[in-house]
Amino acid sequence: MKKINLDRARPQDADKLQAVEPVICYNPSTLENYDFSIYEGARQTMKKINSELISPRSAGCINVNAGQFFRIKSVDGPQVGDLNLWSRGELSEFFYSGKTRALYGTHMSTKDRLWSSLPTMRPMATITHDTLDWYGFDSFGGSVHDIIGTRCDPYTNNLISGGGQYHYCCHSNLTRALAKHCDLKLNIAEKYVHDVLNVFMCTGFTRDTGQYFMKESPVKPGDYLEFFAEIDLIVGLSACPGGNCASEHSSDQANCYPLEIEVFSVNSNTLIGWEKATINQYDRSHGLSKK
Ligand SMILES: [Zn+2]
Image 1 (cartoon, rainbow, N blue to C red):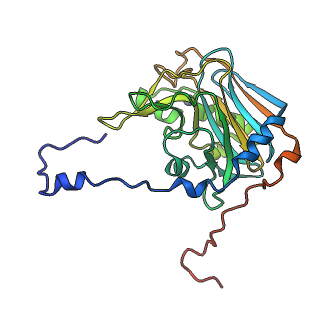
Image 2: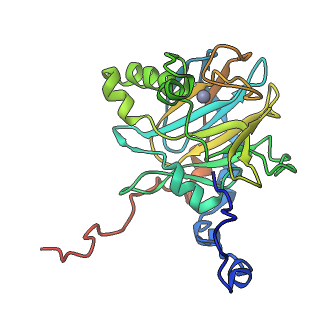
């Protein structure tokens, strides 16, 4: 964590340097060059065609086609979900939480898009509805649906607990689910599990030390986060062993509840003007002339 070294002499212009106004790194207006009204029209015709119930402390994968919607829904009790997205047919193209965070900020909501890893870097999904968008940021700087955490995992738990062997962290849950869904060996599937969108989780950074914190999620049964698939996807979701993440994770201590993934098709006429996302147009020459 970042601490002030009081033994370090401040330079003469320290006050002036610290008073410089920040600049937003990426202007989000250039990313909003798509017609959101198409999604608003299409969602009026949504018809549920598939669903999967994710048991507590486990994960599941489901296919969602480009042009379909899917929802992550709270059922039975407050529960946080760790979301992974893969391009179907090319698992090495997956959700790039770091760049998505740089583009939009620490927490996601309606109209934000989940971008894929380099070099394809294209929108994988667009968030079209968020029943927790009333929350905003609380007085601690906390908010819901973050892309700052990674996913709870057995390796960090092993280090912090002094040798613990816990097998139902989101990383392991997603690894088992992807291996089963794609008929892969466990060690192969594990390579494709990546940093998540923490659906419903309430998190932030402490103002004084900049440390990652979590607090009780405001989610209630019936709440959902809704997405539109911009490409053919495998959607993976883990019902985190932390439950509502009010106290701890990486153990069987918290009360946990299921989550549901719902998939919806829409009337294709409503998608006129929308096209499946194409891969990034950078030429990939990286400064060397192409022959
Ligand atoms: Zn977790």
